[in-house]
Image (tube, rainbow, N blue to C red; front, side):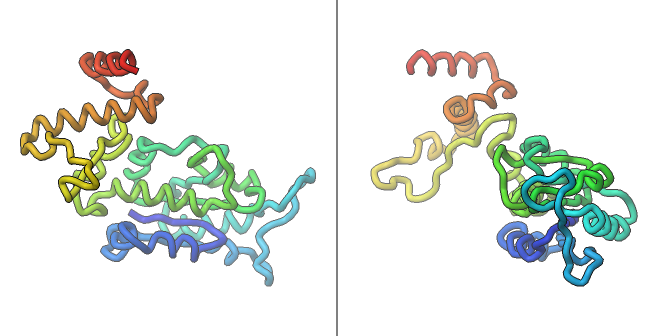
Length: 244
């Protein structure tokens, strides 16, 4: 899978993604990262890409032409229009379901804004998806782009060493992941739950499912509205609420 990132700070993207799991996947050729410096398309000797917004207001705005030319360079390289994501607080909230959808693409473009944003006209011309990673404001789109790329990359075949890892993590089936334990068996007086030492696979899976449901009810009850719970699990939650 190939990621193209249109940015004023390509070194930030490069440094962030050429490490850990994504870095290894890039080295293996499973992922490809192309950072495009929007300033290279400024068309002036000072590489200036911003100007004052019409109508007044605080701050500067990224101009349409450099952003458009940066995108067109990627489009020409790909030989077709590509799905292009603009990182903005005004966008649709990013979630695991969206990550799974985007992971089906073979190439994606991420547009990182700065200052007070980007001229609306170029957004209308090139953007297909407006996405937010949360209801807060950052200084630019680079961190959200890296968050999305990291999440999407984990769903690309071959990126994770364990093929099951991406399927049994938080938000699978709208449930949080169950608690996990490693050696030693007893740590500072705290013991590993006996069922995990039993070697009984069915009982382990049953316990993990129950823990996922209980943990979701405790920390993210909003997710349960979308979760496919059995009648037994619903009764279990009612019993937990009565105990509280």
